[in-house]
Length: 347
Ligand SMILES: [Zn+2]
Image 1 (cartoon, rainbow, N blue to C red):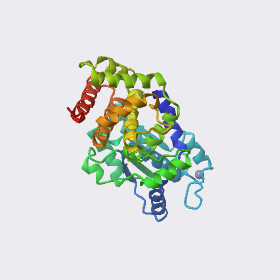
Image 2 (image 1 turned 180 degrees about the vertical axis):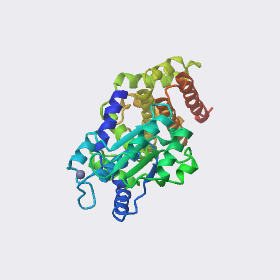
Image 3 (image 1 turned 90 degrees about the vertical axis):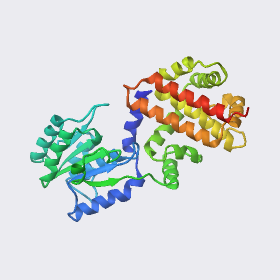
Image 4 (image 1 turned 45 degrees about the horizontal axis):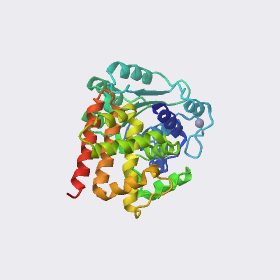
């Protein structure tokens, strides 16, 4: 499953991100006016398109034949950027759960002191800037204090809170916001997805690219058997004496996929509630309709939303931090689900 997600994520580099276009055009304008900052920070949630816009900007800065204010997408430089093989473009990113240390930053700043190899500019992109150690951030500061005329530094982070104030004060910071519903719906429609369910949009509100990924995964129809086991697991969790083990170990087998399936189980219950106890053809738990109809009576909309958020939060925690105690987090989640059902069941 993670391989699948990786390949989908790499597909996304060719997807447009219209909600970022006004910002990108503004950056181009400031460049042509000679007011472009040497240090930029883009913040925003994961899946908002930070990396895409940074890459687009790097292509623009490095293009040797800028046309109509944008990159030409054809020159040697543009081709090398597309092939991830440009000598004046340097990417630094933390390995999973590791920090970015001073040695990595020094290597980069040395490159920034050299002359550009191909065109007139050099671009360094630092992904996950919150992972910079204090000394690494200090090393960057020096570069930002004495910027070379042709060097540009772009930092990406979810929020600015973990960055040193001294570093922040030398960066031009922009927080990237999510598109509104209509922009999101139109964008998905152009990509071939029709989303009429605002619930799904709400859950992925801040991460359009994650939403797209999610829709692509759904299309691939995760195995019916695992879905059946999810319904069975939830049934046993609710009506059998406390024994989390079998459901918990089913989820633990593939946290990324199975928590998404559990999320969809609640999502289909949610749709039943909103849709006169009927499921659309595209519901992935259509085979368990009678059971889901009973469950929708037991859970309020509020409880369903709370639990859905809990599932997605646990899922991202476990996917992003492999060192966390998987079983403990899954069990805690299952107990929350059980308690919500208990709370809502009339005695
Ligand atoms: Zn070009």
